[in-house]
Each structure stands twice: as C-alpha cells, then as structure tokens.
Image (cartoon, rainbow, N blue to C red; front, side, top):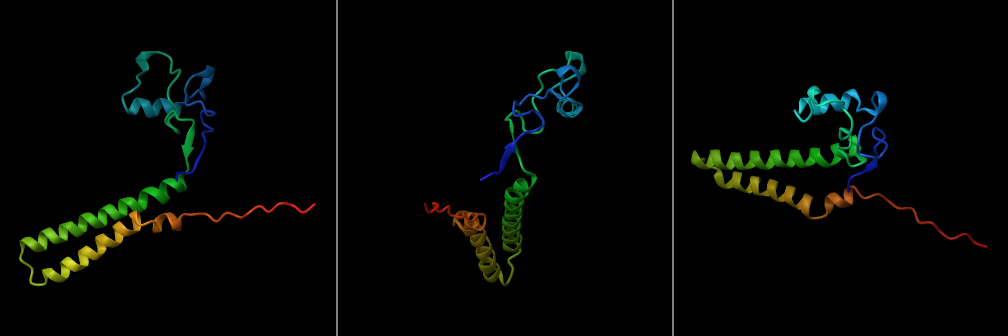
Length: 136
C-alpha cells in the first residue's frame, strides 16, 4: 500500500498556482516545457498540472517509492540475469548445465515466492496497538 500525503505544492487541487498572480511556478513550467507539453508561445502559464502529484492532489512519499520500486527492479534484474545465464550456458553446451539449472530455478522460485506468497506483505505490515475502553 502506498503512503500518500496531501500535496502541499498545489494545496490538494492538482493545479499549480504558486507563481506570481496565480500562475504556475517555475518548477512546473520547466517540467512541462521539457516534456514539450507547454511552450512560452501559448500564453500565460496558468492552470498547469502540478508536477509534484501529477494532478492528483496526493503525493507519494520518497521512502514509499524506494520501498516499493527498488526491490521490484532488483528482482527483475536477477530474473533477467538468470535467464541470460541459462541461455548462454545452454547454447555453449556447458558440462554442468544441470547444476546451473537447479541454481537458477531456486533463485527464480525464491523471488516469485517472496512477491506472491505474502511474505513481502507481512514484512511491511505495521503493528496496530489496540485501544481499550476506559473503565468508569
């Protein structure tokens, strides 16, 4: 579950108005100019989508991005390297290919089990402290 917070850049509206006279700020202008979605010829930069929250009004924490995206990318890299090992050593008719196949199968099985077996959800679960009713 992503940790979302209210976007303070656009005051939860999704539209940047932090510049002078209610225009968009320099950061949002530069962001959308670089993406070729805004040009200076189109007039005053009013009503640009907030570049922090992408117009949602809610922003994702940096720690949440790190916790959810980095392990997935790392797992993809490991799986791709494992298949590359199988392909290269399979084409070369490697003498101990059977042992390599067991290693790669275990690696891919561990990664798949971690992501789809619920262990990842248990690792990121937060303990809830119960609230007990007060005695009269």
